[in-house]
Image 1: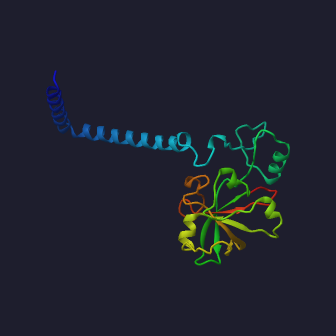
Image 2: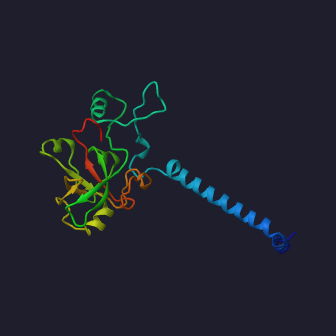
Amino acid sequence: MDTIGLVETLFQDTRFAFRMLRKSPGFTCVAVASVAIGIGVNTTVFSALNAVLLRPLPYSKSDRLVVVLNSPLKQRQATFGFSLADLVHWRKHGSVLEQMEITSWRAEPNALSGAGTPERVRVQYVTPGLFPLLGVTPFMGRVLSEEEQVRVKDYDGAAISYEFWQRHFAGDPKIVGRTFFVDNAPATAVAVLPRGFDLFGSHRRSGRSNAKPGESTYRACRGKVGGC
């Protein structure tokens, strides 16, 4: 059969299918709804798998990054984060990992004031070496290392996201060194992170913060043995 014949046959079959569907509107609605639901479910599943399993992390040498959690011997299904005391112990006695840093698992909503209109922002505590570990270079300013922070009395440095800098501070080129309050605790902007940086992704937003995806403040976590 030549190409023209195949096209004619396909056209006839299509017309016949439409006539049959028109004769049975109930069956047509069910069929169309089933196809639509199937497409929606498949799209959702693929999007989740792509984000979690297929798409690489947006960090340099991401294949060497691992997440370490605590798990009791008698409760393997339960997992807990690390405290700063745990971090000090692992750094001293561990030999498996080249470098270890910790961060609070969620970005918690906090009240920001003292810099324009007060609002709720997401704040995540991190150890100073986390950004270099991920290969993240600030767009502006820099995050002091742990050795440098020890020499600074009452260090209160905070790295803010590029998006938050643009929206709340109108892209102020003198943002580095500017002070504000986070839940009544003083903080100083020491760096603006690269555009689009979002440590765990926007799906980890918590609370009722009105911040948009990617708009977070990352504060240095130092001296809190109870964990970040």
